[in-house]
Amino acid sequence: MVATSTGDGILAGLNEPQQRAVAHGEGALLVLAGPGSGKTRVITRRIAHLVQEHGVYPYRILAVTFTNKAAREMRDRCTALLGDGARELNLGTFHSMCARWLRVDGERIGIANDFVIYDDGDQLSVLKRVLGEMQVDPRRFAPRAVLSEISNAKNAMLVPAEYARQVNSYPQEVVARAYEAYDRALDGSNALDFDDLLMEGLRLFNESPEALEKYAGRYLHVLVDEFQDTNPVQYRLTQRLASTHGNICAVGDPDQSIYSWRAADARNVDYFKRDFPNCEVILLEQNYRSTAAILGAADALIGKNPGRTERTLWTDRQGGEQITTYEAYNDEEEGEFVARQLNRLRAEGRSLGEVAVMYRTNAQSRAVEEALVRHRIAYRLIGGVRFYQRREIKDLLGYLRLLYNRQDEASFARIVNVPPRGIGARTIERLRAYAGAYGISMWDAAEAAVRGDLGDVTGRSRASLGEFLQGMERLRTMEFATLPNLLDALLAFSGYQVYLEDSE
Image 1 (tube, one colour):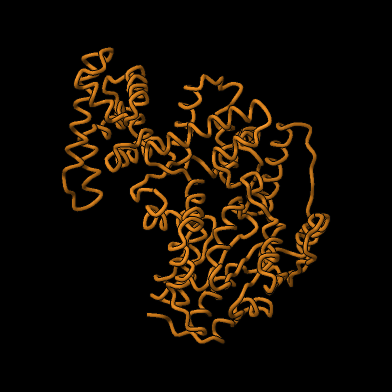
Image 2: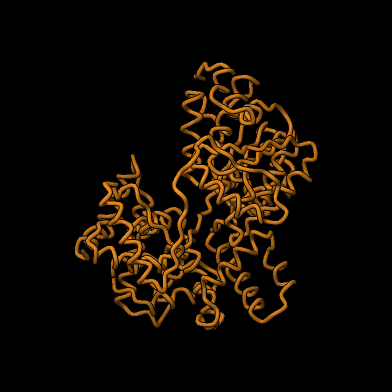
């Protein structure tokens, strides 16, 4: 059921530029929203206005953003405005939407719908193996750096052959060879990495007129958050989706573009004006977050950027503490300064829970932490290991993914000897080499080893491989009412829970 807020209610509490952005009807709209100017409120109110005042069915609205957190916040706000009707909205990240489209229609361009998605760790594992097979010195070509270059190529819409044609140095030649082998390895595992989701999503629309007609026709209105952070592939995706009706709303701020290292291109704002020449441009300049002192300093800095759209942030919150700077001689002196400032604030009766200490790189936390310990100042370090990056979570996901897809080489190599089963690194490398030589999966290579086809695999390893394959096959053929039931059976078969408890 859709909530019954009136149009006036949706516009209530908005300033005049915000109201114009929310009430904009059909056609292209570009909202340049400064920090703290209420852009999320504008996007969600605009969605509600389209549903309630223009009669647009929620399922015909697509809103994309960059993080799952932002997507959840957007959905929560839309639910507050639309009630159950918000459940039919298409809200998500670029990657999640592309994954959804490819699951349904990927076979139109040769992508099986049961593909697995490799995360950063999986990608690095595959690339390290590729570089090892190429006999590349990892000290000269750091795997993460090579992977970053491959990612940049994909975000620039360059497939391996296209990238190879433009190389002009030996390092680029190495990357080109690694890129081709890396993509081949992913194909062999029926896997896509995060960049592939975007590239293949765009290829789906470029090569399948039926798919483009289906989705461009389904989404009558397309909204894009944080538009300044879109890369070339993401921009083309939104352009294609709006090709039928031209109803696209882009919200962003080139002044806040910080992801150029990840192929984001703030010039997409200018390209938007070029590709949608009749677009309405609305500036959100009133800041609701900061004081005049902060905004004055920000404007003084950002105003020096060449080629920016002229706009000036302002606020009703006058005054505020002035910004102070301190130039330390070294890291230790800087850490000591931070600790002294915290002691001063505490002596003034301020809660240290209101204080944040930010640094550019994780390595810089050491001097600050040591100073805080010396001064006996309690602190909480934010940004530890993420849940899905924890070793135990990645191990269990590896088991689940291998159950789902026996071609998944990265998952097989990760968990075949976890917990330890007497299947050593040499055996795993032998399986990998055999699989590569015969064009089969590592699972199939393991079955060959159990049959005795790999003479240099020891009897103990063969027995352990046989037990592992049999146990996994039993789990594959069993039916489980819920995922927790499957996990319980998996933990029992693998002995993983006991392994973790013994490791603690």
